[in-house]
Length: 72
Image 1 (cartoon, rainbow, N blue to C red):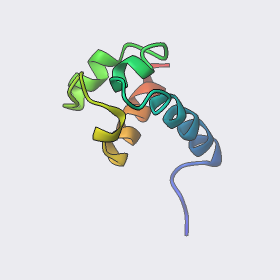
Image 2 (image 1 turned 180 degrees about the vertical axis):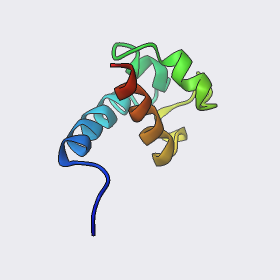
Image 3 (image 1 turned 90 degrees about the vertical axis):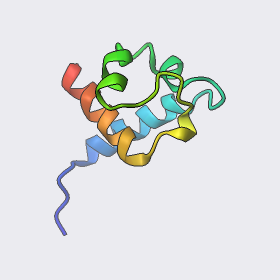
Image 4 (image 1 turned 180 degrees about the horizontal axis):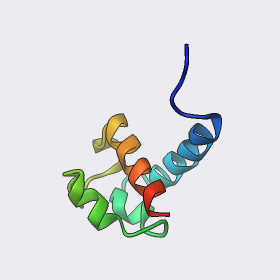
């Protein structure tokens, strides 16, 4: 079966998730703030700015990560 994402995508995505869950009781946006301006990304994806890491779906994490890669 062919995969649309390369191995480097998953290595980078895993590092992104580690950052996202680095402080699970804090707001997700605070855990990620050093990576980029996430207010715009969260607003675009209809994710509350006060969401905790466990309140965001796997699909939403992929969308956040893809938005981040487009911003870099």
